Length: 235
Image (cartoon, rainbow, N blue to C red):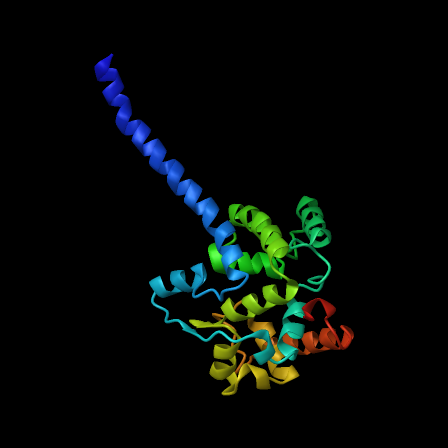
């Protein structure tokens, strides 16, 4: 009996350590979301993963007041039109994706990734199209949207998202692509930056291709249709 008890010790020890690791991975984003409500994130998971692959990290945190109002308008109109209405997950768009996926005649042609979901991915997760990441993103996005104001959400997103290889945040992006501060971005420049978000590795806002310019022009049209204000971003 004593020998059997000893043989179970290593297995129990590994199980205990596995429980600690899983507990930490679950608790980390929950706790840090509370911290980031008042403290700027010093880095993101995506930054660290890119750095490990050889990219540098060019970033500079700025408040939303120091970013041209055109940029959040461009990004919201491009990435998450119902940003002010949903609770972190756009259930209307999500239902549409499910319906597309169930249509046997057509492949899904849209995604349902909201700005809170993209922020969760950037801060705590990884790139890629694995379904498990989306399943983790959704509860994190709901939690972040519950803890943060919409203004804080877009402020953090604009400061951590990648705009070019190794270039993170609106200020670094504005300097990199247009040699100016984020506060001085024009509507056209904001639309170009929003246009590269789906693929900042291959798309270039400073030297846009014909395709990127076309996307930016469509974003400008959407921005004009949003009206003068995004009330959810007001203090």
